[in-house]
Image 1 (cartoon, rainbow, N blue to C red):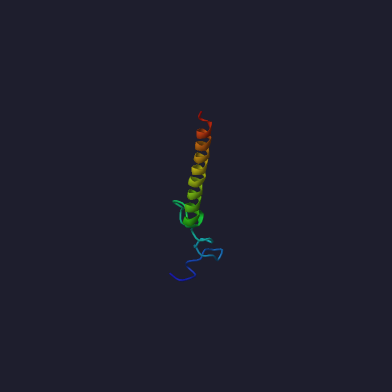
Image 2: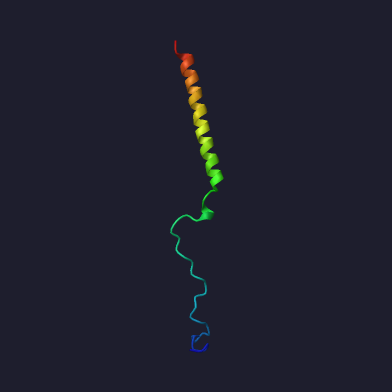
Length: 65
């Protein structure tokens, strides 16, 4: 098969003009937050809940008569 056989009447080859993109099956590494950020958010959430529980405990103990 020669180069002229592979072209159609318009002079273009049968190749697609844009490359095929693979189907996305799940989250890409670019779409996810870095692991250090995730750990930091988790620590902040646990810390804030711990402080809130401590304050609740202080008010509970101070109000018990």
